[in-house]
Length: 198
Image 1 (cartoon, rainbow, N blue to C red):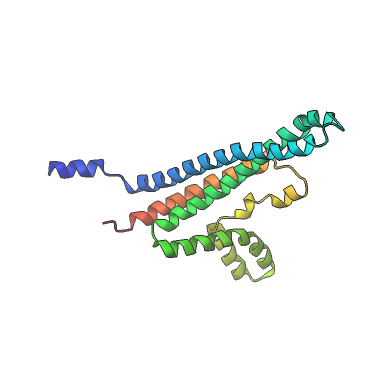
Image 2 (cartoon, rainbow, N blue to C red; image 1 turned 90 degrees about the horizontal axis):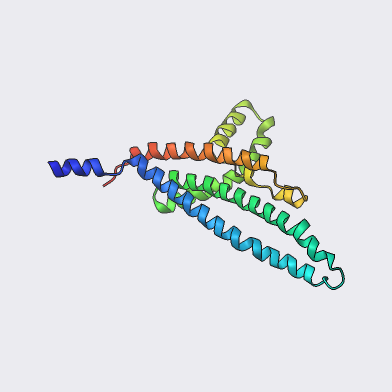
């Protein structure tokens, strides 16, 4: 009886298991993206430097302009882009935790992929149904709340137009990721509490 009480006292609670799983995923993603950034930025610099180096004998001021006007600015924008990509992936990691605590692997992959696709389409769908009936608008807006709006992290259009990634946009994405991930983890805890574990 004493041994049984010790086992009950020492066992991992279900919410701790879910939170630990999500925290481990986030830690792995942070390390991965940090390594990618550290490797990608110098490689980008190398490509840019090679371009400037070809013209160094013709215009020596290009080499000085490379560091002053291009290199650090490029590194800054690349880092911001990687940060947005990290937030996007963390949001989907929260979805993965919700899916995996309840569904079998194959069905979970299908649902995860469906959420990923829907997350990139939901913003456009909401705009399309604005002129439709009230019931349709209500249903789509309800789905839009449940599905992550992944277009929030997409700044490809702005970058293509030569615009910089602003810290205000990144702050909004951080807030969205925190709120959505927290809600998803809570849902995962509730679902996991009702699951029989043998």
